[in-house]
Amino acid sequence: MDNYFELKITINPQMEDTLSCICFERLNCEGVVLAEEKYKDLEMVSTTEGTLRVFLTEDSVKDISEIKSILKEEREFLVAQGLSEEELGSWEISFEEKANEDWSKKWKENWDVTHITDNVVIVPSWLEYTPKEKEIIISLDPGHAFGTGTHQTTQLCVRAMEEYPDFKTVADIGMGTGILAIIAKKMGADYVYGCDNDPDVIDVAIENAQKNNVECKFEFNTADKITEKFDFVCANILHNVLSEIMSDLKNLLNLNGKIALSGILDEKKDIILKAIEENNLKILKTNYQDQWISYIVTNN
Image (cartoon, rainbow, N blue to C red):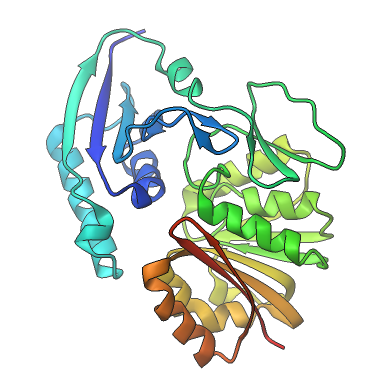
């Protein structure tokens, strides 16, 4: 195979998932390694936290000026959305051509079977795993970082569904790879709907559902345009977006329905608490994981 290029970006570790998606969508990269993390049931064997390694091949954007321009544009967009320079990190980059190497095997070495809760297990598709009784197995190719199950905000949503499992219909707003929708279906939901405002993830989510032998409805859409009602809504989205669409999320609920609000940094919780109060929603439970918070709210 031809030589490949490795882009290293210095970031705030909290932004690894967001920037990883940018690299897939805007740079057409072939893979990423998040902070060189090796996972074993959420325990890292090693890490170079704060560094995003991006693998670029012949079909990727490799012009350094174009890369800088794209990153500058995306950074300015995130700042306009309310994120601070400190939250984003420096985004300093280095760019290096690497000798012929099977990078696709190399980044797979960083992944293992991951128990995101006691009952839900993420298994990379290239590994074999024998499930224990009542375990829910999700088979995924961890390429895009968001929605591989290892991120705290995803785990908080799964935890919320486990704590309030009495649902028949579920919506996953900002579904990404569709992992939460797939888990909801495997937990027993009769009907699961997922939408995202990124057209590139729709086919990924559909493929993941097919791989896991479940039927979900996925489409390009936003919460304000949905007319259906649901028993449970997952909203794992940046805090500023959650605040803006809180009324739309409320409108998706059946009577006594519940929303799992995730993607909230502890330091941004006041923004979400204000939106919850303004929309007359009631907090049933608050869950914490590292620097992240999730609120489970209801319209009752």
